[in-house]
Image (cartoon, rainbow, N blue to C red; front, side, top):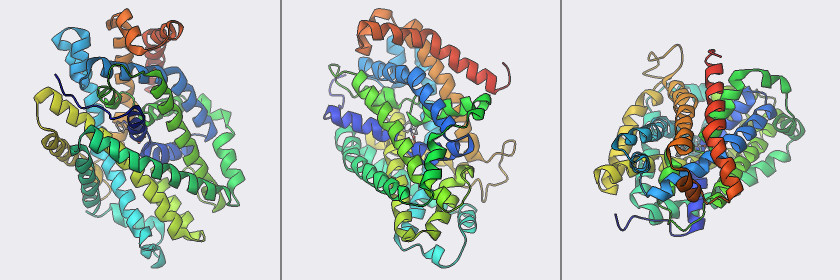
Length: 443
Ligand code: TRP
């Protein structure tokens, strides 16, 4: 196929991939999981998985995309040499689709909170406490509206294509994101509880390491945060000209994404400890705990607007990547036009996401073993589809893709390439498998 769209520049590609990786995962998800799972110990496990398992996979996915110039299912078909191999790409697209369904729901909450704080935090001034505020909001129908708003922003950007849509949006939004985050983290450090907050992020409680579910949670978080095994890295790699090198961008994305998560911790936990709220609140950390902080803080409405603005920007650059995976699948495989594909994909994601949007309200009766549908989708994606698919990708590149071709496609030097393949052939599948089995209680 001639005329496949491409990134306008290498910097644009790195920025877009960083935009894809940095999202709700770094701020909302990382902070609540770290809060629940021992703070610094969780961070340490996370780093362990990033270096050992995620970096090799990052390069593997970029290599698959760049060398085939196709969306995931066609990419696997092409590399596997048999038609049936297209199936190996299905979990990648499926993973993106499941996340695409519930991610805009949470992004929508952030958008709604952002606008409220931008207006001066009228609800806080009316004296409604944060629990009641958030509770009333998610118990209503209105999350649907905000979910739709995020999806519409996504469609508008993705319809613009790679260079003029996704790349351009990231060029504007990513610097803004960095500024907001650094500003807020700087403010966090001036708070009286900064020492306790930093200790929580950087001083490990080793006892957390004896719990296998903490290992799985950290692994799931590493995959989720780096957007691994969700088709995005393959898809973004497929818009890369063949002569562009991979290891540099892979390293930049892994480091950049981790840095964002750590700085987000430096922003959140000093505030949490300064105002005596609970760091282990779970998924409501950003939406109930943080508003409690903003209420007590001088200039809280401004900090609140900045915090939720940050969340929205981070979420939008990721939501467009999720959408792009499904769009690329529809465009490459079925020859559908980009704008129509964006509409179709977002509509499907919206519909599947409805149970997540209304799961604490009109559809609260719809639960699986007590978990809300939002929880179920997030668990299904991060702790099941992603690890299994990561294993599949590692096995494919390690065993099916011809060694010389794979090595060449990785752009790694001979020594690194050998280590890379060893990691994909043995280390990754074994470790991921062990963590999965162990946390299911089968090992
Ligand atoms: N990495 C994103 C975050 O941290 C979430 C995510 C996972 C994602 N897989 C993705 C985003 C694929 C875009 C595309 O929030």
